[in-house]
Image 1 (spheres, rainbow, N blue to C red):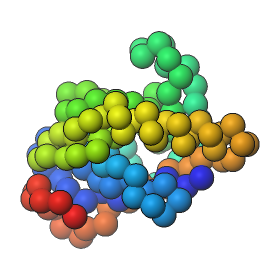
Image 2: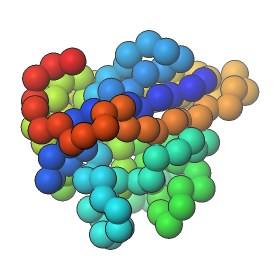
Image 3: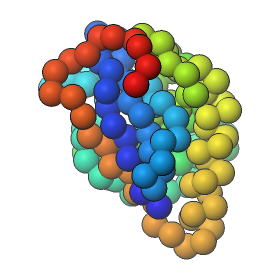
Length: 144
């Protein structure tokens, strides 16, 4: 299974992109700010392709998707949350978006997690490719 995160909207507080699952749009993803130098707990992970495993999260006390081998980051997960205060480098799914937030995060997460779990259960490798699709920073909040 291939997850593709296309980062599209950038503000001084967050980054929002669209997540595709095997080429079909799934949801929005809220992340921290993309910046050249890492600020702990406030910087989006580097663009690239990462394996996604499902492992136990001691923080959330449940199984969650984990992005593996992210340079200079540990414990990068996909989990519910709505604002940049909830990210700390993680990816937060949502069905709606605003300037610095996503809505209905638990609903979007549950649907995405079921797909990741099913793929892993079938023995499929799950990977996420993260990239910027705009050459300049966009601060608009209009839909795609």
